[in-house]
Image: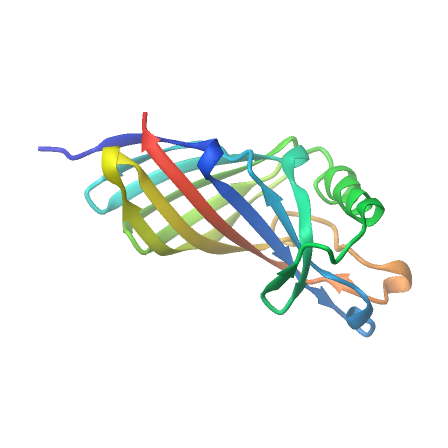
Length: 183
């Protein structure tokens, strides 16, 4: 007897963050950033320990949450105009031509699995690790986890500061909390 359950992402209780890190000679003058989206949509199915998921994040929903000092977020680390400029560059230059980022993932255990992340121009593999998977009353499942994406693998042109003084590291950390409710 199958225990397969179909689930949908509850956008009001789900979010995703992208963490970028600066590298290079003058990286200390640049900012490590966290961008967030609360417009995460998607579906998942669970059958015992096995699972599949398809998640979509609209590029125009990504907002600068603040600057990072190690793993500590400073929500006031950038002014409004700098935030707006970063968000514009992400939409127009870094992810230009991509309306939404699509991730398809699957696994055979509640500890994580494999994913394929797609932009308009390319798809790249990633590994997904779950920090926690909590079954809630009413059939809701809350999944907290992370993944790392390679910008180069996604054909994203290297992001550099003026005169190449710093660059954004190739590895972008993705941190997510998804509330999945019965479909």
